[in-house]
Length: 153
Image (cartoon, rainbow, N blue to C red; front, side, top):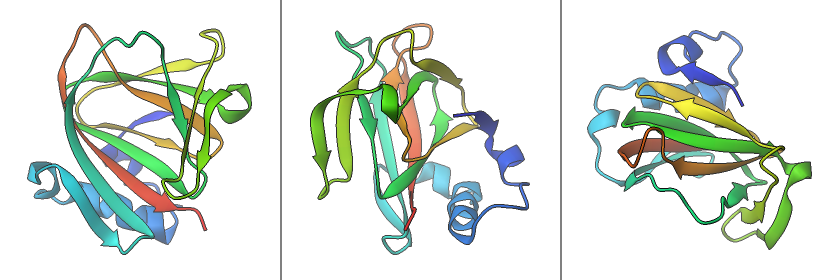
């Protein structure tokens, strides 16, 4: 749950082979200009989802969590807040669906940490972290983000 500049994170000599593939994909100059969609990086072990959306203030902050993949979330354009919380502090409102590798829940504001992401920033969410993306930073903004899913198995 730390925010990094992608260029700094890429210098880490201890990245696993799958994490290295994910980072190398993000560093390719052409990646940032790809249209929204899903892109294989290493089959289903590492793949990217490119998405463009408007941030918005929700009525309830709904967190998501995954068991099979960790998320690398990288902001190409725009800015947003991603709230994060330890999975143990999540009140599950929609149980885990293995087919989609996701569950949803709510958390007390005193339990979560807001992360501020600007262009070039990234963060990594492991299965023990729930996260609530797409929250506004300084008002609604258009965001282009790349989420790289890295299998933990």
